[in-house]
Image 1: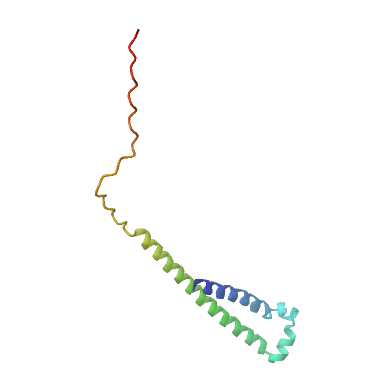
Image 2: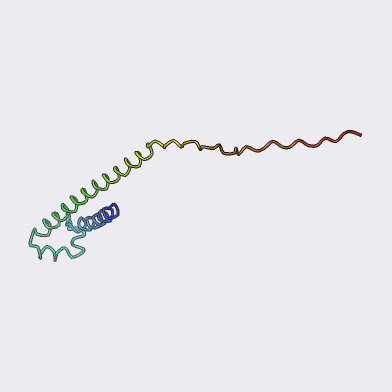
Length: 116
């Protein structure tokens, strides 16, 4: 689910960038450079502006929703990770028979040679 939301979020970002760049500004912006004049005649005098602004509004709303969904998903994952970290570790029971210790054995005494 997280991968799907992330991919939709990224695609919305890219699409919204292009839609915003296509909108005519003061000097017709990128819309005129990429054939915005043809779009204006196809949608009528004000049709392209309202169409592009509606598409931008829908993209912005979907972007907002995917941002919220991703933040809730991250928060839920974070809370679950913190809860797992705080969970008490079950006490291990002592073995029935004692195990031999891993302590090194004392060295054997060296044989003494009587002086001559």
